[in-house]
Length: 134
Image 1 (tube, rainbow, N blue to C red):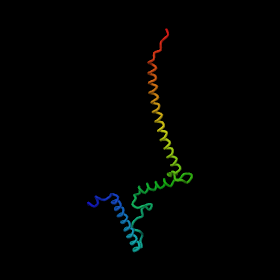
Image 2: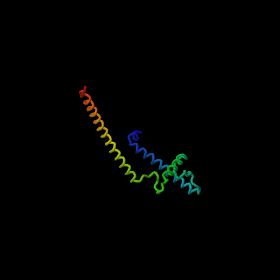
Image 3: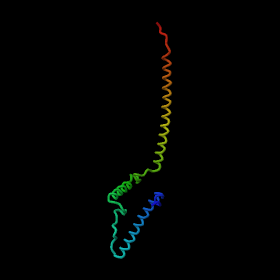
Image 4: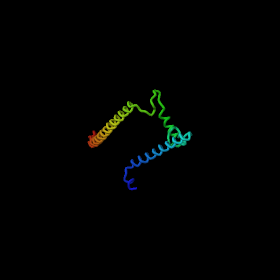
């Protein structure tokens, strides 16, 4: 067991996938051999939609996903596909919005400075006493 503990997890996943694939190949070979020998149909049932190892719920979900991906707009472009010019334009808009946000922060800082100066100016003008005419 120490050998498996020190190995990379991706290697373990690859070994499991390889062993499952090998089981499927051996199963297919045995099935073909029995089919030739007996002249009968395949002993292993065909899974729905040609996908192996899926439950009916998984198959329905996969078919729904396939249906969603096969829908197209009036131009024949799949609905889930964003053409490069659109994504490029969206990136440019995002960059422009970032620049606007930076400029707005600068405006707010300048406004705060102006408010402080106005407050100081108001304080200094209220201290000046104007002689009254009597």
